[in-house]
Image (cartoon, rainbow, N blue to C red):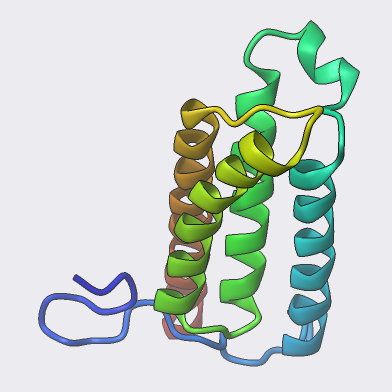
Length: 141
């Protein structure tokens, strides 16, 4: 099942949204993706988890979901292939937890963090799809 095609083969999540002057350009979305990736790497691979996250129950899982959703959403808006973006996101969810558990002495891997990461990827895809559908509806009216 492709995340970017309907069962009948129609493209439902185009790589690049139609250009309009008030929409951010592909270059801006690419920069946003790079920033989101840097934040993601800093959060996931810092030697110690931020202390504030430990004070609020569930904040760690929300943080994981948000950083993965941000990377996914911005990458899709930048025009990267949906299969590549989602595949990378899911793989990175698993790999990041293994790296935290095995290579970072101040960190531990948590399977529930990987679940939150994957949910973030799915949320990013859903948000990108919803925005694309909304823009298509506006373009036809």
